[in-house]
Image (cartoon, rainbow, N blue to C red; front, side, top):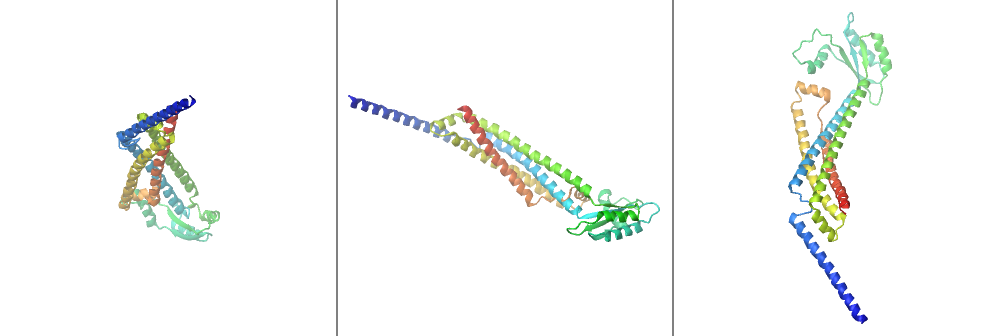
Length: 333
């Protein structure tokens, strides 16, 4: 009697296990059929996928432009400060009753006697007028204008000139000569440049945040549209990490594609801007722009920064999609 009971229980267990295997096989077949029907869990060539690629490309383009602008500003400020900090300037103003040529000669001689000064150059009247041409043009007659005379002082390497002694020497010459070591200008220039760089970095951060929000919305939409597939995958034993990795892999591909398009567009823009700046470098307008903003030198580092922004966009896209999927799956559970 007991033997018959055991045989009946074993038969029921085998039937139950067989039913579970049949259900699992049926669910697996259904999940495979759904995945084959749409190609993957997140179709990359769908309308939504192409739209997301365009959004990521536009965001990457704007971020690369802002990052490139910060690089240009930092390079221009570095050129300005390196060239200005190595020189000082003496301005000799024409004054009634004084011989400006004698004042220029006396100021130049005082500069040569100052320790830490390697060379002194006194600009002639013609050279001083030439300094005004980028601003006033070449057709203006400035003969009767009281143009100040400039004297440039080059500093010795790793040496700091005695500016206090030179100021006393110039004061003894008369009120026409004054010394400018450019410290105040360098300080204001550095402050302005740092502010512009902070603004550019802030713009990059905001653009990346906006891109992350767009990716988050797209991921939630994709999870909702593929709710049936996710349920079938859970039935066949797939955990949340598997589903999240599938979404992350697809959105990473979308991020790479969009980031590459945006970075390429930004690189082309800066490349064309560099060619145009070289082509029009000899014009008066270009001389004025270079005098104010410095030369356009994007360089290899600028393109490396653009590539880094594109990689950051692609990585943040995959990371945001993974975090969003896992959050949605926990909410669905």
